[in-house]
Amino acid sequence: MTTGTIQIKRAYAACDETDGYRILVDRLWPRGIKKERLQCQRWAKEISPSQELRKRFHGTSDFTGFTEAYRLELAANEAARDFLTLCVEQLRQGNVTLVYAPKDEVHNNAVVLKDWLIETME
Image (tube, rainbow, N blue to C red):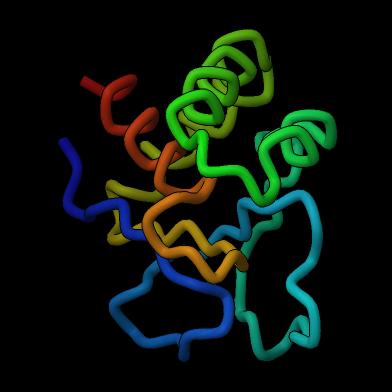
């Protein structure tokens, strides 16, 4: 049974106490942000979209294609199962916040990852 929720938050937004366990889910460190300011307990670049996927969909409007490709990567990624286990453990203690850098708050890897986590936990 979980007590927390999975949230997503932009790396440039201020941290607050409701964030809980913060995980940076981008392959690249957010430009211009120091480690102390980001206040993440983990950088999970191993479950972020591959360089190839990131480059292929950067600047395109094909979010559906990106979502499908990223979900296939997650399904084939052994580290994704470990990440799921970590999230389940942290959710027993409180909220988990997936931190991302892109400006688009609707079409990004954290949105896809959050949905994948919720579906996979059910």
